[in-house]
Length: 311
Image (spheres, rainbow, N blue to C red):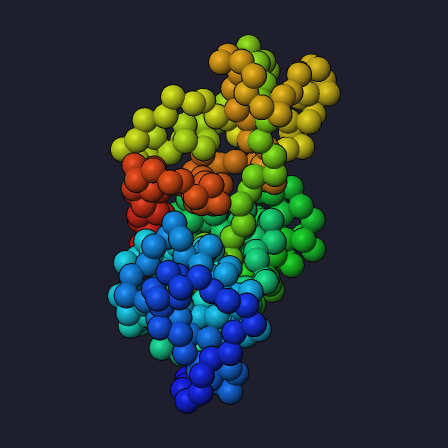
């Protein structure tokens, strides 16, 4: 990368509280001929970093990049998931400049942060990873996900363009393969939370569901060393609406009664027999930003489970 230091004083448009300003070394630099503000700090405080960066963003009309020499994997994950530009000793993550370099990826990779997986692409990748499958054909995708062959072909081409799949020709057939090495942070950056809505129903109404799959912290307790006293189930949104319209289930926006159970409505049908699979679970929980250390540790355990799936 072409990086140069601008030897001039940084101009503020709005004042920053002195206590916050003293926590950072503030410099103006150019990366690939684009001026940015570099905030250097010795360590990451996840509780205050977003608030501090918001203050700095109002003080400058330039992109802001955080510099921390040493980051743990969980800290790096937190910054990427929150779309915070940063540089460390082994990672450069600048989504606004479309750059993501780390010690395992020696060439420039265009992340195209705005380009998330389509719903079907996310479903397909999760299905393949959870079931330990590597190959997929157009007609198989169409059959598994009840879509047209045109939609199936489109989603496989999408994953090929995003470098998550490679294609080989076998006569007239095209066989798509998941790439051999998928970086977990790149994968999760492409994915979106499956949760559309959270609501509550009476405990007795859960018997109307043909399948009962745990999600949220009820599911997290199956993957990590944490106990949950709250019961949460997941169902695909359209499926729930069909059941509700047929049986006339009452729904509530908040937990008004201890006998209510939480229901998450998802964009797609969840995978899992009793407990939802770990990838979608992680995606559904990561935006909740738990404050307590036990839940953060449990999320770390879940993250490692996903790494095991990718291995």
